[in-house]
Length: 342
Image (cartoon, rainbow, N blue to C red):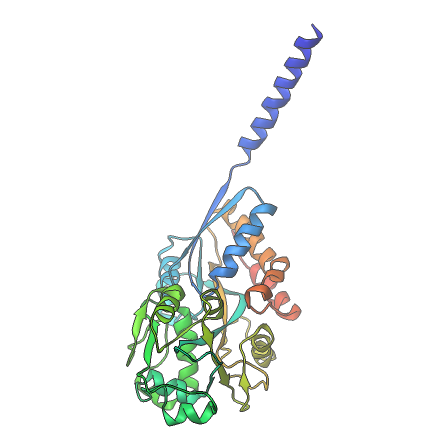
């Protein structure tokens, strides 16, 4: 009799436990966009799943242009971009979309020059010259002048760039517009532009793949992709005349140069900053969310995640060479997240 009672109690407890598990419905949150922050976002989704087991993230790393298109079309719960939405895009959305800065990173000039294992120094003039198709050989006098002692080959430069709508492209072309009047006039900036030269690759992954597999090539990628693919990348001369290595510290210096005049909507460029130790091709990456949310359950889960990401989640930034948000900026971002309504 006692055994029967114990069995009944155990069965009841097991039933209650099973009901509790099934009553905790898993919420799926769909996002799409930038490849620039994808290494960090993947880490965040993985770590957050340990904290809240009732939410799953489905993120498509398709480029900032795709992220903007999908948030406008309302086919995702959030978009991700490294390029600020245009006024025309915001009009298409029909409702207010918040730009929530999550972190900042660096766009680097990665290269593959056989038998050259040193880090190159590149100036604004050299970078714009290469992408305008004016500097075509690795042993060009302008490159040699900045890199004495390096045996640069008499080989044609193979230029790599993005083929898809890209926030990395936005940051890079934003920089080129700041440092080259010719680029600003002839090409301009955007997530997609009419390139004077170059082989196109899809995503940061695609451009990194072109560089890795193509001798004498150069291309722009987010720094994590250069590191993952074991690519050399250049130091870039900044506005103060110093050659700067891309790093958490030099990206942070770029943020600090703009922090005093940070707009409330966070739509600010970090390229070509004034800071003496600032890396000149840095940029924010934003999560795009509608201020007025339709689904209460999804909105609550998304808000909770965003608050975690810009506070506790920032500790994962530095290991992946992203700059964590400063304490003051975090407070501003949390205020923005609190504006989301449902």
